[in-house]
Structures are given as C-alpha cells and as structure tokens.
Amino acid sequence: MVRYVLKRLLLLIPVLLGVIFIIFTIMALTPGDPARIILGESAPQEAVDQLNHELGNDRPFLTRFADYLYKAIFELDFGTSYRTGKPVFKDVIVRVPTSIKIAFNGIFAATLIGIPLGVISAVKQYSAIDNSSRVTAMLLAAIPPFWLGMMLIFIFALKLGWFPSSGIQSWKNYILPMITLGLPYAGSQLRMTRSTMLETIRQEYIRTAKAKGVPQNIVIIKHALKNALLPIITTTATSFGGLLGGAVITETVFSMPGLGTLIVQGIRQKDTPIVLASTVFLAALFSLIMLAVDLLYAFIDPRIKAKYSR
Image (cartoon, rainbow, N blue to C red):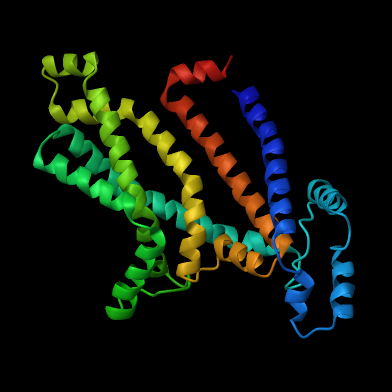
C-alpha cells in the first residue's frame, strides 16, 4: 500500500508539469500586453517596453518557461503578481479554503439529494415516485449553474432578502452557492445511484437475503447500498474536479474571494503568475483527492486492498 501511494505521488510530477506547460502556453498566446494592461492605454510605449523588460516578458518563450519551472520546483517561488507586485503564493493560499468549502458544499448538497432519491427510485422502480425522480434528474442535470445562480440571487437575495448575494461573512453566504453547484450535480448523482442500485438489487445474494426473510430495510441499506457505494464514490470523486471548475463560475456570480475569482481576474489582466499558481493548486488538489478516493476504495473493498498491496 505504501508503495502504491508513493507511486501515485510521483505520478503527480508529470501531471503538474503538463498543467504548467499548457497554461503557460495559453497565457503566452492570449492577445494582450500585461505591461499595457498595468500601465493603461495612455502610457507611452517606452514605459511599456521598460516594464515588459522588468517583468521578463521580452525573453524567448522557452527561457521564460524554464526560469519559471526552476523557481517553482527548487525555490517554491510561483512568481510575483503583475497587478499587486506581491508573491502569488500568499494570494492563492488565502483563497484555497473558500474554493474547497464551496466545492464540498456542492457535493454535500448533491449527495444529500441524489443518493436518497436514487435509492428510493430504484426500490420503487416503475412507480410514480420512480418516474417523477427520473424526470427531476433530467431537469436538474440540464440547469446551467450560471443561470441558476442568477435566479437564486434574484429570488432569495434581492426579492425575499433571505440570503446575501455576495461575500463570505457568515454561513448564509454559502447557502445559495451550495444550491447552485449541488442541484445540477444532484441529477447525475440520482441517475447513477438508481442505475447502480438496480444492478445490485438483481444480484443473487440479494434475492437469497430476501428469501431468508431479512427485512427489506436491512437488505437495501446493509447489503445493496453498501455494495453499490464503489461506483457512487467514483462518480462523486471524479465530479469534484467539475465542481471545482464550477466554483470558478459560482464564485464570480456570488463575488466570493476564491480561486475562481482570482483566475478570472488574472485572465482579464493577463496576470500569468496568478493564473499559473491558481491552476497548479487546483490540479494538485484534484489529484490528491483522487488518491484519497482510491485509498477509500481499499478500505471499503478488501479485494482492491489486496491488489494495491502486491
């Protein structure tokens, strides 16, 4: 198991290197001059050229990339923000908890809605509850998070005044973003849970348990749901990356100071160090969560643990 964890951690290196190269290339090809953006359109060209020289933007692409890579790996220096002139590491670290909280809140809301409805829908297959659940799942999955966020702000923040429309001052600030991220994913969670539960319920050991007179609730919860958890966990974990991406939009809609708003600001101002550092942190976070999920598999299923131990 230890060997497997070390192997996965080593695999993080090429993944992060690839992310850095892709984002670095995209930012280099993006139209716009960082120095011009910083100084303004009225700034003389001499001042713009001087600032670009100070920022190192007049050097060849590969030279800039190699320099950034060396400092990031050996000095843990992810650069200085073009906009603030401060190290980007501190700006990113401060915003990471907000993005994680938003993404996990979205998963929590989706799981709280999707899994129970999926289980009920499978147990009551072809009933009115099942049909309505499937229709609900399709509707939820089709809702664009951006539109949903705007509607929630309009109804619950501006009209009713129940929740704030921006900021992170209290727990109420996280309710609308949680719904915005969680509801669309809840539809996918519902469909996955229903499909997995139906497949599990048809297994021979479930029919044997029923034949022995085991109560329905115990059969469903202790036997069927437990064995259906692995694919459900897989879907939840892989969707975390999507939820982190959705947090970029959600943070922008609700004006929350997370990595999403930082990336958007960095792209608008062509602040390459900000965009690079934020994206690398997101990629590393997603990879570590996937590793944690794999280890959770081993805890749930002894067969997987035996495979990892080889």
